[in-house]
Figure 1 (cartoon, rainbow, N blue to C red):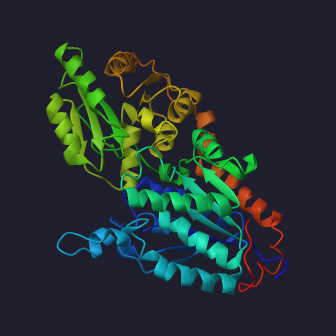
Figure 2 (figure 1 turned 90 degrees about the vertical axis):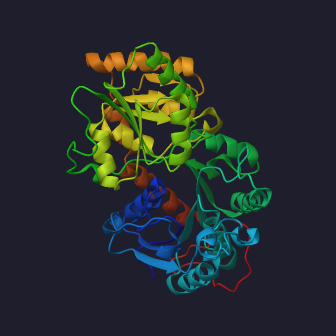
Length: 436
């Protein structure tokens, strides 16, 4: 109908009540931004049983105007195992492939009824892009694909069949999606090299960000408070044993302990919600740093924000093998305004972002010698009160409101430029499909 609000069908596996991952905040933030900008939004996602962890903490942030369609889905590894094993074909391209069986018919039905202006899908669950690809090919509705991280990278996925499945979806997405959306400049450059036939303007960078609402009315807390006089550094979030290998950091701590430059009763590094507790605990024991390294369980997101606000310093870990990725938690670190110790390469996207925001203590995660020197200077400046906090003016550009406005303009541009987007919606669904 002429004058009607534009409509987006948003395909996303992570969505409230999913919890236990920062990945849920990006689609939720985009949906909220679209709703505020006057869009009608339908989210096509999974039944809650498919999520490894659930919480109602973020459910209240879903705008009342947003319709959420939940297709049946199960986790192959949890729900479809027999004697602890499951057929690999039942987990291609990912363990939630059963989502396709309900999501594609539900998406087609929705397109017929609502005639959306654009379909958007978001990785890291590969089947989301596969669902959007099928809906686009069936209907011709223009498609925007949010990659976040690369679908195929050096050594990832490690299983050859999964890697081939991801590569096939990656190629289809790069060929048929109208715009390809990434979270870092480095990923944009990599994909432009991989797909040189696409126009440069088809590759767009909109980073992750922080949600200002998460910081509203949060007091500096009692959450995990340490005794007075003890320096408290916090790493909040996943510690991947490869992409965020903490062993060089632990080696530096061991050397500082041996030299008497730090003491177990005056200094603590807390690793909150590592998702690999047993493996990281093995590293802690191997380096003998249990006196200064504490592994802590997950806590609700609001409490995690409060804990950041109460820390003396916040630790980032990102290895050079993931130099074109930026941990989503970094943006919340920046908004928290606490001093940051960045264990990452200066030439990485994470290092460049942090230095742009005023962070000066940066050391390569792979170098225990660099970490040792940088950590000593960081601690000295903390004690002297001279360590620089992130620049608030620069950080404000990474609020989800600001990034969401960029996303909304991108979708509006795609919808306006598509010749099939007339006021009455896309062409009839049974007409032949064409590329882009």
